[in-house]
Image 1 (cartoon, rainbow over the protein chains, first blue to last red):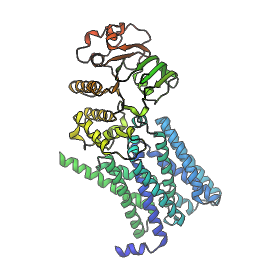
Image 2: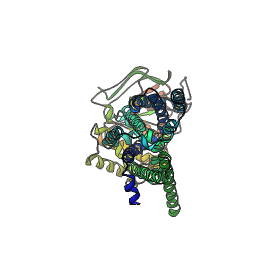
Image 3: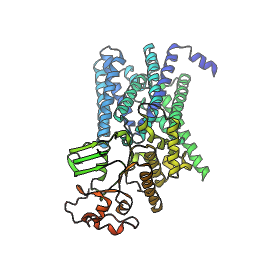
Image 4: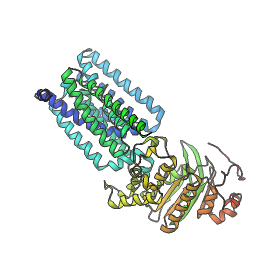
Length: 275
Length: 253
């Protein structure tokens, strides 16, 4: 086991991927708790589709993927947030509209320029080779920002998530906090997308929160638990993908599903025992 | 100057006026009860008082040193909260947020205030229980404890006894009245329980898509709108005041 790990980490690209992945999954899990509880899970999904579109365009223009993706996805995050705040039902449909729309634009741009090749597959389902040195620096910075924001405004995030009207009435700038969460989510998604895949990145946001909610009863516990679950699942997923030569993104998602089922059945057992 | 002054104010949703012609004021130490049937615009008015909604016409002004952060608010429950993973204590202590300002963490005093208000409502034993596993009445009391520990100058209750059994409801009314009398905190309560309103409140605002009555409770009991309920003052919860008031413009939303 240790030999395998040692061998794994002798590759620079893998070390980079693991560092970026661990930090991205930590951020995604923290933001995910709030997003899932506010019924905003779809925003994460919508954003990753927009991210796919921007990746395709960036490749076509020969530009650095991050410089194109970050501003566009951040813009999309504000737009999606505005849509979901205004009306719940229409917001759902509007997110689907934007998701499929940007997917279509991405596919079209790719087929007009490089043609449908392995690049497309990598964008959609992720590639562990995609992480550059720049990404490592960026993800460390992002992780520090997310952690700092989370710790410093934890109580306000709790209030905004639990009861937005009350928080607003208490003088908390709820709009600003929603924006902040959307902004950080957009950054997390753009960073993690090329490794996890545009189709799979939103699982990092949704799964850990749902998993820890099976067992944890307190908001603080849910937050801490999902951060830990997310990081562990990612690591196990990467190791599995190295040993079995499976796609990284899919492996991580599968590990997350297993964790979810595990937590769910433990909860069932607990309820059974109490009766 | 009064805490809150409403002048010819109207509130509504997307161009439809829900309640209009509001002229009243809330002074320090008042216990104002806003009564009226469903759809009479009570909850809309509350949103206006909380500045979650701007008046369509007229004005709502705060004075006498009242800041928006001085208002402790107890909302009607939303569906999303019902399965929220949080302990009762976490919910209660979030009431201290308005006093926190930009300081990020709760102080020892905040925690003590949260514990004290949980004691007061008799929910100290369930402080670590999960909010979603509490009964409806316990959830309501948790939210009330949160509003109480905000310790602002004005407490705003939106139908606080919904989901409580009659004994607990009376206890709560007494608790709110005692708070008003002993600590001098100003109370604004929305209720359709006119009997208890007349029994405990100092002022009454009667709404029916527009302002029907505003004045002291004594005046209300002798007014045309209030006379019907004068006999109910001492009884238990009175029935909803449906259709008995000689006022046109009745509307159900």
